[in-house]
Amino acid sequence: MKSEMHYATGRRKTSSARIYLTKGKGNITVNDRKLDVYFGRKVAQMLVMQPLELTESIDKFDIKVMVKGGGSFGQAGAIRHGISRALISYDEELRPQLKSAGLLTRDPRKVERKKAGLVKARKSKQFSKR
Image (cartoon, rainbow, N blue to C red; front, side, top):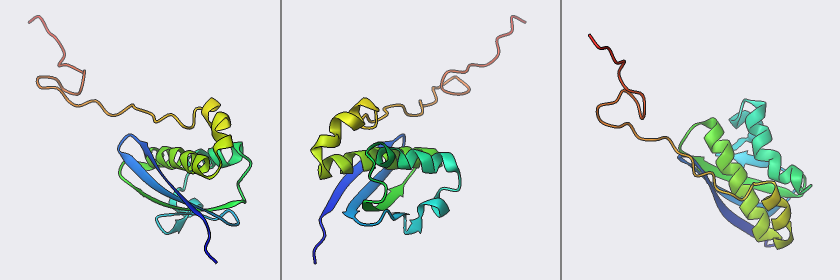
């Protein structure tokens, strides 16, 4: 019995997530841990679940996630992006629904690098005439 597996990659800031989507009962494992164990905060769990709730397919798929880099919310955003892409590889008709919600767009914002002569990326030293 070979089950059909769909693969996708999602990215956000410095996080990248590899998503493996198979038919199942709705189990989500992130780095070999359950979703609610890996993400302690409910907001991060809600971010991950957004594409599944939108397409009404929460209990249709088992999702295995391997994620690395970045912080917890960057990783949650990367997983959300990857799940959206994996759902499209499963069913192309879900594309307009996910596109209108903005779940397919890769968020290009990253941390700006520190410049020489400044304290941070844009913050300079306090100016004093004397």
